[in-house]
Length: 164
Image (cartoon, rainbow, N blue to C red):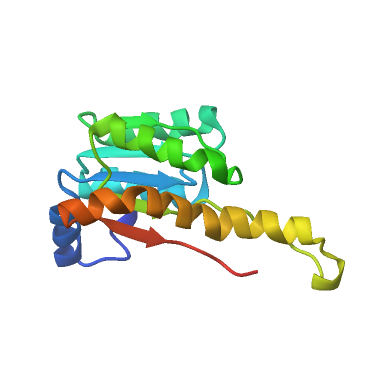
């Protein structure tokens, strides 16, 4: 039961496994932290039909992918590097994500950046960068997947965010 054993009861793990079975899950921010832990937990307990790992650092994504394959050797996992701050390129990246497995069933918008500083000393450019990565990137990716989800009447978004 791995990472989830302490957080979930057996019945929760069964529900999770049933839900993610044969689903294609796309996780942004998958190279470290919560995104990495989520990918590993999915491979330990949920056995998705496909897993797309995205972040800027391809080498770290490959490391996470390798760990996932150790846990679930039959996993179909793909690395799709992206920069969430470049909103104009996210639509085409979403098309590539859909093309990897023919669809995306669950989008986990986990990628983000942090900034610590006093509001009065923070430039508007830094504020815009944080909002683009932490909020608008998720909006762009969701909107890119939404038409197909509406047509299929199936699709989920998980939006992860933090406030410092």
